[in-house]
Each structure stands twice: as structure tokens, then as C-alpha cells.
Length: 640
Image (cartoon, rainbow, N blue to C red):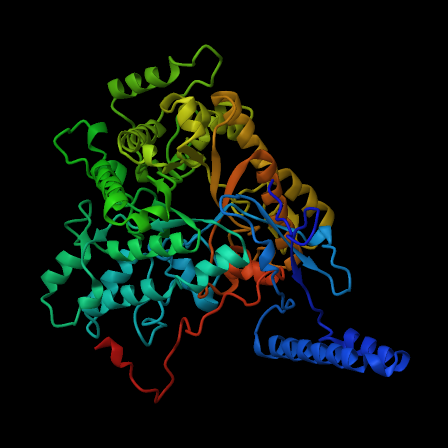
């Protein structure tokens, strides 16, 4: 762990943040009166200064208390001289209680994660845009949760509700009161306003000492500039320049709104300016690699694995869309080294795919019954000969020590694709230029029923299976340098770790039951150590590990989740400390979600740091979400 050093002290000190109290400075005012009564006239000026500071603190408290609609922790100031040096992964920020002591209360030390996600910026997820309608993180099939995409779309008066970005683009384009040109302007306005490349990056780098970000983005990129759209262009020209036709939903005409490469380059240059390194995560692919609103094609079903994984299909005449897309993406990233060196400087690495075939393991299984209807399975098995060859490659090379044997199953299709992605990165110039590959995989790709029937501790075996696969496709030197294994982990979906306001059976503990809560949180936070031990056993020491998504949420339903600050603090604190001890780099999901309503407490890093007294301001926006036009309200002219 790297502690932040105070230049004015001979010993290590945590970055300190001065905290006021809800008394609005009343203690200081009483102290001032005592000083005036007991001190000589020579100290009147000092006393007046103390009173003035107390008055200003009271005004700050009144402003926060009455003009911010939400929790009201105290304002804080940061000792910027104690900010960490670039490259440190773990920082501790602390708060001072209101006293004359400059010592940091150990209970208030807040460990910073290695990085944060800039989620739902360049790859949309509906629950970030529900406004006051926050209920469920994973929107159930058949429901439509998102109601805005500010600043141009703020509710029913400005546009449609939506499930995913392809759904929103289609809904806008087909509306009699809208057009494709307007829809593209809505997306562009969102992308250039959601993240302030100066203020937000400065907050991360300077105020919080967070030096790494992960940026989920769509596979659909463009060389064209959306600011050139006037509305008078032929629609076919707009489609060609600013959208991508999904090859697996071609007959249905599903299109993706393209992300300008220039926007990514500008972002990377801003990262370099602020001493931040970015991991570009290819979060979505055509057809959707998983099911759910984050797939990009929801409510449509995933077709990526059934329609486009060509080399692993019996029909070899199909185009290998996914692998080709990743190869092209790597080529573009490589080009930045010479064409835009400053942008390349801001790049830490890439992630080939997010949570590949997430939840697929619930749809198939032989030893036990599948959880969901097998007819909806979206991850088919590999052809028999290909599966046998790949298993031999993985299991016959245990390097002289016992390793976990990879079982046969549908998951081999995903493991094979990721192996090929690793080879694409390995063959590029990026490793020699100091860039990394963050390989994400999710345990839910494995058959839930099979593992449960075959093993006493199925979750542990899944982790060892992942680690054994990782050993089989990488070398020890690669695992110590550019190949980072990334496994996401959330308490919100873990029955043994979740906590709810109404307690069992919906949660493992009740939010108000401190004893049960601490027992559960302490046990569940040890997941990082389980992760580390499994990988060390299978791969040997020195493997770089990450968990690039975690949060403080105790349940996926915000109505049931524990949203009190005490529980949020402990959930966050125990996870970060356990990950630090296990040497697992954490990335919080997600940095900001100003239109996420009640989700913000446990999911917005910016808002949580405000609630914990680290940042001055909450995560909020000047724009409404779910705005309903009142009778007589002027019509919105931007739709025209």
C-alpha cells in the first residue's frame, strides 16, 4: 500500500479533509465568546477572525441544508500538497472530525480504488437514465425504464422511452415528430456533455487521486464528425457516415449510433494532460454478446455467438465479424502511437470484450436441470473436433504441476474467442509499447446446474477453472506485464452477500442488523483473497489481477437495497481493503450517473464520495429526466 506523504511532516500522513459539523459552526461561535471574555485586547483581531470563519461555515451549512435535496454531509477542503504521485494504485483519503487536532481519525480513512469506470457514456445502459423512476438495475424483460438522454432528451416531451442505444436510435428515427438527423444530434449532445474533460478529470486526478479509468464503448466507430450534421442531408448518407448496420439484425434494420474516433482521441489527450491512464473496453458487439439492457440490442436476444462466431461454426463460409472488429480496433489503437502520440500517452490498454456470454450458464446443463428455458440458449457448443482439440491444448500443458482440468461445455466457445483475442493483442506492437490487455471473463458463462451437481464448492471451482484457462493461454512473463485477468464481482446479485431493508429471505441480512451485516460483509469481502489464491495456485505468483467492476450496492433492487451511509461506507471499505491486501486492482462502477435517481448512493462514485464527506458536491445535473410537459407549456422546437 502506498500512503500519501505530507511534505510538512517527517512521518506518513493520510490526505486530510477538514470536516465541519451540522451545527453550522456553533461550537466555534461559543469558543469565540469564551476567548473574548478571557483574553486580552491584543487578541481581539484573532477572535474576530475565528468568528468570521464560523459564520462562513454556518452559511455554507445553510446553503447545503436547504438548497440541496438529499443527504447533507459537511463541506471539505483537500490538502493538495499531499496528493499522490502518478502510478500509485491505492490511496487513502481521510476526514478530520471538527476539532483542533490535525490527526486523522482512523475510522474515517477512505481507501481509493485503483480506478473508476466512465460507464454509460459511450455505451449506454438504461438504468443510468431513469430519473426518479429508479427501481431495478437489471430491467426485467418487457419493461422499459430509461426516459431521457440529456441534454436534448429530458423526458416524454422531448422523445421516447428506451431499452438500449439501438432501441433509442430506432424509436427516435421512426417517430413522426423526429428524424434520424435529430436522433444523431441527441446522441452527440450527450457524448460531448456527459463528461467534462477538464473538471471531471481534474476531480478524479487531483481531488481523489484516482489515476486510472475504464471506458466502456460501442464497437461502432466513425471517422466522421457529427457537428457537421445540419438536418438537410440525405438519410442514406447519414446512415453510412454515422451509424453501423448490425450484420446479425440486418433484416430488421437494426443500427448502432457510431462513436466518433475524434471524440476518443480528444478524451485520451485530456487523460494524458491530467495524468490519467485509460483502458478502452469494447463493451458491446453486433448482435449483443450477452442478454440484458447493457448488450446494446435489448430487448432483442443475443445473436453474436449463434450467428457470427464463424471459425467455431460448422459453416466456415460465414464472415468472422467479431474477430475482425477487434483486429481493426487494435490497428486503430496502434496508429495513435505515430498519428496522435499525446492520445497514445493517455492510453493504458484495451479490454477485448465485457462479460462475454454473461448468464449463458443458466440456459444449459446436463448433470442438472437448466435454470432457464434451454430453447433460449444463446451460446452453442463448439463442434466436437474443435472442442476436443482446444481441451487438449488447455489441459495437456500443466507445466509439471497439478492444475484444474477445464471441463467440456458451451463455455469453450467463449474461452476460444478470448484466446484468439489474446493472440491478436500479442501479435500487435502494443505490448512492446507498454500497453496492457485487460481480459474480462464472468463465472456465469459456466453451467450453473452442471457445476452445482458435480462439485461441493462450485463457485470456487469456477474460479480455479478460469485461472487454469488463463495459465493455458498466457506465459508467466505476460501475466506479470501486459496480460491482466479481470473478473467482476458484485454483492448485489449474490444471495449470500446481499442485504435488504426487509431482510431475509430477500437478503442475507437486514440493513439495521449491525451484527449480521458486519459478519456478512466481512465474509463476502474476502472474495478478493479467494480470487488471488485460486490464480496463484493455478498460475504461480506474480499474476496481475483486476476486478474492473464493483459497487457498494447490497441488492439489485434499489427499493430493497441498504442506502444508509453507514452500510454504504462499510460495504465500500471492506471491499477495497480486502482487494488491497490481495493485490487485486479495483475499478468502481461507475464514476457518475447524474440522472440515475436513487441508484446514485451505491453506484455513483462521485455521489458516494460526497456522502462520505470526501467531495464538496453531489452527483447531480441541471437537466431534468422524465420531464412531463405541463398543459400550455411551449412546444419543444429541437425536435424539428
